[in-house]
Image (cartoon, rainbow, N blue to C red):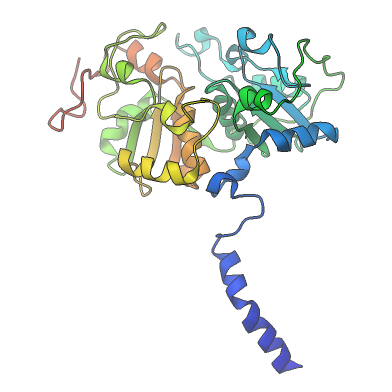
Length: 325
């Protein structure tokens, strides 16, 4: 009997080693990503809807222009302003995330419980901002619909025009900051020149990065000194900016851009929305969550403070990392 158990153990040893290595995960693997379960396909979502999964909550991270012409059945609209703190509470900076109490009220009004499965979809990049907010405030089982509404329609699935009926029973989810480092402020970005084990990424367009274009809301054109360019569209399919590239496509892209897995990764854009695309891309690829940081105020906050330095033009190797204005 003892020899038989030994032989059984030896036979299973390669499998046990394989499982322990993290190479296999029953919930991961979509598109080759270590955290592929952070995405959901339109076919999977349709199955949850058809079975009337009581835990399912669908959120459309869309504007009225995007939501009203037709949305996924049962989807509740959560436009960007719904999670934006009033500027007068943020030193005049627009777009910062609402506090935990306000996020709790929003989530509960949407019927979100602690055990809810939340699926978020988008047209371009707003879903990751909402996903980041949920993650910051401790909600697990939040997934992004790969391909968004475009993929849903392309699959021939139905859409609704009228919004769903208001929830009669509020959810029980309570927001509390669970991952403090996920959100950083201007002071932490300004101190990065003292933090060699960090990289700062600008997820805006190249014209914004070089200062050729200034978006509404910013106080001047340019970029944070020392930042590197990594436009959000690189992580998405050209044909559909709501669909993510595969892990095989992502990895060489990250290498070409110079992402260093050993370093902390900081992201910014205009207002902390597009920056969550880079954040989510690395999360999908299996990078440690504690090394990923979103500059919530982003360029709006940085450009508002005229004491802070600004760079413009194409970067040069000899450009000082913190040259003054």
